[in-house]
Every structure is written in structure tokens, then in C-alpha cells.
Length: 420
Ligand code: AMP
Ligand code: GLY
Image (cartoon, rainbow, N blue to C red; front, side, top):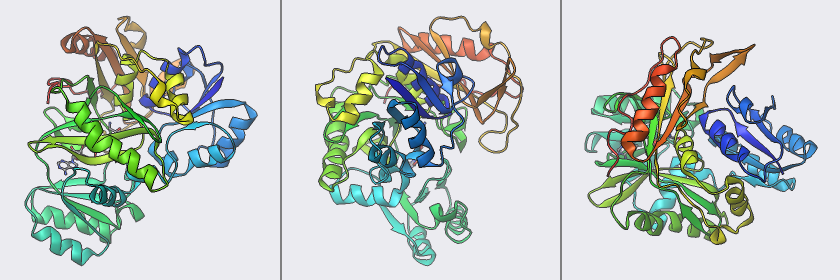
């Protein structure tokens, strides 16, 4: 069948790389794609902000499956539009993706259904938010309700910093309508992990546990980013995944279905493993990036079969196989990311990476003639597998060293620790 992937990051390159290996995949399109996805299929300059343009293209090219990867297109209702037009689409509907695009909705949902999460309150009144915040323990976590490019969470160490944040979110509209409503949340102590589950509306299959490294700097310092590197699997105590499935993932699947909004696609809860057990800090309704790059190196099953099972509601019958190797992804970022950075810098020595255990996924890149140029904050996701975590890291860092572009920055402590 012909397949279309929506998006242009490292996640989409990894999906294209994996989908291309499926015997079910005939023609593969990526919209808008990047220099890496062009190696796997055909990039198309579709107006992806326009659902109808995507529907029209899917009809014209006889697409049998559209994979909507990024959060903003899910929130835009792309899956709804495709489904209504009779085009099979992988991903949650706009209403189901609300678990990600409204933190207030997600918190309310968790409270109503007893899903373990940080204590919190939601505010649309600045004065009430301020009064509540001033009597909370420090640090205190302030979250913009809506999507904010991964920048809508502030962990304030002082009440002054928290007050500044509330002002800028609620009064100055730092993220427009996304930050007029805020969630004020208890800071959770513990180790952070990423959970992913394939979901078909009634059942769920969990991936091995992974860990992202969200801050820009070594030792988890500096501002938050989209994610600087991932290791999987994270070693977890026996029964951990069963507990997460029973207390978090299945209640979401069952309650969403019960409320008439079945969740299909990837459910990605971010967790903090506290002394009282795992607690949710956020829900994402899509593959993480660079979690996806890492997972695609470990997934042995045919991805197209699994995605179709999610769309068709037959996931319970699928047998999903994962490699028993370890995988590590190291992100090479532009100087200045996650703030201001330059684009259009030449990338050298990509072809010098000849290690079979490494795949270099493109994130923010574009091609000009024969030259690959930087075109984003996160430029490349260097992904390696190994028999052990140490071996995977060794391969990933060697390749990260070889590739060159001006201002290249990466964390050398990705996967330094892979337990909980
Ligand atoms: P989010 O955008 O919700 O993923 O939040 C960004 C980062 O802030 C997370 O990856 C965590 O490291 C941190 N964070 C969010 N909520 C909390 C919390 N309640 N307690 C501690 N850390 C948090
Ligand atoms: N890597 C974190 C995210 O995709 O949200």
C-alpha cells in the first residue's frame, strides 16, 4: 500500500526508515520531510496546516495509511478529517489528543479516575493562581495549559520566580491562548522515564521503558529542550510495566472509551518514579522524539502491521516483538538551541559514519544541491544499538564525534544511567 507520514523531524525519519522495511509498503511519501526522509521515500511540499490539502493528496495518491506524528497536527484534527474522508489514519482524534493539548483536561481526567499524578490545581484567574502558588512548597511547577513547543513548563525555585512566570503566562500571554490557563503542580522527586504504548481504542501494548534527557546541559542542567538523547530499555524492577499498565495506561484507555472518546495511536505518559510509585507528569498522544528513533532500532515486528492493527482495532491479536539489544540515541544540536540558533550551516562527514550498528536520523536538515545543511535546533539523531547499553553508547558517541558542523553540541552523558 501507499503510505504517507506527516512531519519533518528525526521521529519522522525513523518512522520512514522502519516503514520502508515493510513488505506492505509500496510508495512512501513524507510531508514535508527533511533531507533524511528523502533517502527513504518522496518528500512532498504539502500544506500540512490544512487538513483538506492532506485529504486531497491522500485520495489522489491512493494512500492506504497516513501516520500523523506531530502533536500540533493531531490537535488540528487531521486524523478526524482523514477518517471522515475514508482514509485510514494512525493517531488519536482531536478529542482524544486533548490528553496532550490541554494539561488542564489531562489533570482533571486523572483526578476523576484516580490515576496517580502530582497534586495540582488549574487556574484561569491570575489572582487566584497567585494566592494558591504563594502557599505551595518550593520548588513549585507551573505549566501552561496548551501546547507551547515544549517550553510551557517552569520549575520555579522561588516564589518570586513563580510570580514572574504566572505574570508572563497569564497576563502577558507568553504562549498566547495556550498560557492564559495554568496548572500549578507539586514538584515530584524521583527518576523520570518515558512510557509508550500502542493503543487501538480498547487495548494497549507497552514498549520497553526508555529515558529521555530533556535539559540542554550535562548532568540535566540548563533549559528544557525537545529531548537531547534517549536510552532504552531502562532496567526496571519486575512487575513495573505491569503496574504502569494496570494503574495508568489501561485506566486511560478504558475511561476514554467510556467517555465516548476512544484513544487510538501512541499513548506516551511521562512518569516520575517516586517513593510512592510511578506518577504521571504529562500525557503525550504521539511518539516521543528522540524516543521514536531509539524504539525503531529495537522494534522487530513489521511497523505497518502494528499501525494498521491500532487503526483497525485488532491490536490484542498482534504479537509485537522487541530486540533484546540496547539502543542509544544522541542528538546533535545547533549552537544556541533551545534559544536562538543559526540555520544553513554545512554538515560534513555524514558519509564517514560506516558503523553498521549506527543509523543517523535527520531531524533539522535540508539539502541544497548535494550539500546537507542544518535547518533546525535539533539537527541529527545518531542512533546506535549494542549488546549492552555500554556498547550502544560507545557506537553512538563515536559517530557523534565524526559528524561535523559549526557549533555542533551534544550531551556526552546520554544513557550514563539506565536504571530507576
Ligand atoms: P513536560 O513538558 O510536562 O514534559 O515537562 C517538562 C519537564 O519538566 C519534564 O520532563 C520534567 O523533567 C519536569 N517536570 C514536569 N512536571 C514535573 C513535576 N510535577 N515534578 C517534577 N518535575 C516535573
Ligand atoms: N522527547 C520528549 C517528547 O517528545 O516530548
